[in-house]
Image (cartoon, rainbow, N blue to C red; front, side):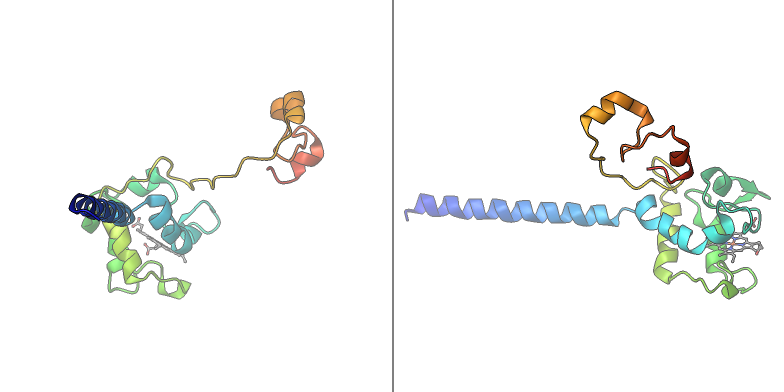
Length: 177
Ligand code: HEC
């Protein structure tokens, strides 16, 4: 192999290595960013929504953490979540307190957050508590239904993705697709 070819090969290898490293570092920085749906919502829904969620029968402290408006609303001058200000956020205070009477989730609920989960919540609030596009559950993406074009054009919107007529009473009783 002549010298030129050798150099070229070396450069190509170097370019590949750089490419791989750049991709890797992009992946790492993406993983560092806190995503509400991926990192925060599961913590809240596992540990808090039972008492601070949609179910009015279990709701405690008149606080909903599944609704952005309520989480940000002023409660005697403080909010459960104050974007950019974790120290002032009631949620962080209640997660970090040493007082078992104030601690959330309450010790007798048998729920508890790990240090790592509390850090994540705090980091998320510090960075502005971004809820993403939807505050409430981001719906899981459903794969497209295997609709046959014939059924689709005949019934258009009255047909769900199993080809059932959504106007029939039996369908209304059943689960919506
Ligand atoms: C088993 C029920 C239960 C669970 C689970 C629970 N809480 Fe609570 N929470 C309460 C009750 C009861 C109160 C009202 C009494 C009080 O202030 O301690 C309350 C009050 C609060 C308050 C104070 C509201 C105010 O107006 O001052 C915050 C903040 C809070 N909870 C955050 C959380 C967070 C965050 C989680 C999950 C990590 C959580 N709670 C899980 C029962 C629960």
